Length: 275
Image (tube, rainbow, N blue to C red; front, side):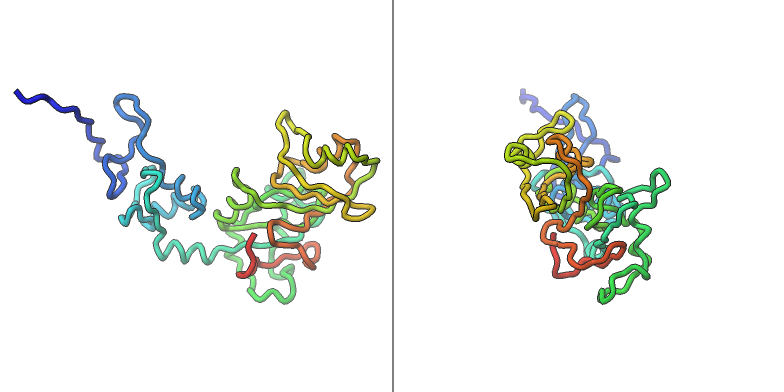
């Protein structure tokens, strides 16, 4: 008598499958086991191919290939080391996405309108484009344009607006390591101990802040270089050491500087610039 071997129940036919991989994804196995693999959209975002929202859109349009085979169903899972490739049409769509650098003035909010204040994106139109910007303004670039990071209503300086999920993730993703540089005008006395605390040792909302680089830029301004962006972080840091911020300007994000861009003006990120 032949011994019976163990077997696993095949997944229902309407579940999304991963080409070239055994037993595809399931939301939950009959035995309560965790689903196999990782969502393809999550893998794509983690690898910087696009945002998860963009990944879902590309998958629905059949523009994603896993291990050489086209994937068209949302929720499809794959092995963590699966080969994932975007189709030519998806790459072309990404190439058309715009990233805009804006010198946000005081009085504009970074994101959605609030309390009667206008969002910074309303400053982006043909009349406010920086003179000499070689790329002409296209109204289509306003579609889906969103801030990659915040800048308080009473702060000024460099604000990045982008259609590109890859850029947004690079700047504000949980694992982002991009530096942001600010010039901060303050009132109050700052001794060596307080300066050391600004560099490392403060907490906000019960959570320790990552190490910063804070030093005097000139007799009137401090230079802050941060790798995180908590809400009103610099102002709250200063309050903790007895300082009052009277002016705050962001002058750099990564390798991209505000430069001579006037307040209220914007330009496209150049092909030779990288954050």
